[in-house]
Length: 427
Image (cartoon, rainbow, N blue to C red; front, side, top):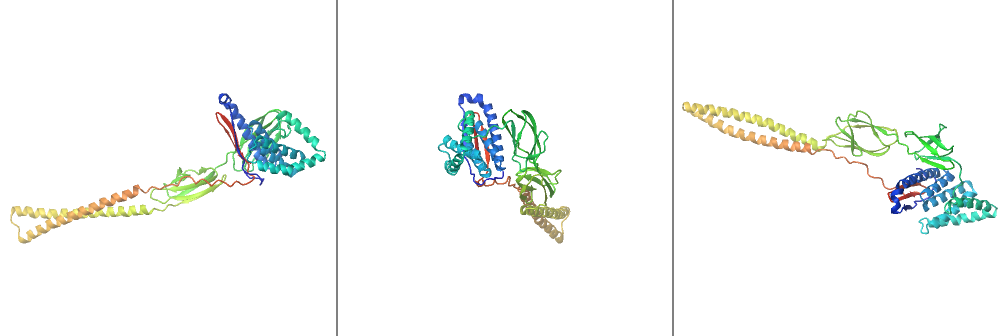
């Protein structure tokens, strides 16, 4: 979320623990209460970024009523301070001063104590000057009326504004419509009648959401809508049979039957095939973006070596066959001469031929055996190279480094457990 203010930093974590004996009975109400508080805080954070400081302060204080937290008091004080600085609203000045003081009383060891004291040093003289101009009486009456309803911490909360809906969404450019009215930018504070209301929220690159929000008479009802982003589309062509993986998970095979849908953001895109170098690319895609890849994979050196070794093995098979055939031919010649010797004596030349045939048979047989052994070894090595030439995928992209604590950011995380409920955020 874009930050509109530049003077705000990380704020602390607050946890509320419930008594163990009552925790089981109160677990569900605590969960619902924390969910409402989260909705108020999200709406307040977005209103703050949008410059709607009065709305932001009221939302923070509503969240504080549900999940008490000194940090929320500080956030509301910051919002009222901004409202005074941008609109010169005297009531906002008095409320900011009161909330800074409430924050310091609520947590004597507050992490933002120095900031709150510095703010009071700047604002209290301004408040005194306003009092000297005759505005202190009105401020005291407003503070007393609020204190009777909510106590010291809530004395600086905005006055009730009737039955209203507070609608927000973190999606950039989110727009809201209530009961068929024209869409307006979020956040929206809409005065409505008590009862159910049809709310539609839309933003470019997101699926539209429609929900029903029930307004309660005299209350501000929050609804923070999380829009689902529309996926990007990946079109992949290239080496047939290759596997396509996104963030280490196989998603399709080339050629892809349909585009691959991926969530907007950073991904690692990989195309792999045994015996080929992996096509890998880190990509960042936006909503509804179409990305095309032509992954023509090249053979790995191991696969090239495997084919070469198998070629040697195949040549060895041919050589073995040829040598074995020649050895059998010389064997046949030697047998024929031996049979003739049994029937009648051989002439000297025939005896020489017989001896030569026997010697050649031995040499050719040995050569055939050697060629066969070489061929077997080549096939064994070649098949081994094939078997261990599987691509290695890198998997998901590395987690990005934590962002710098830039001033002006607003965020929150609400947690609910069986025995506790809490709020954590930054403002």
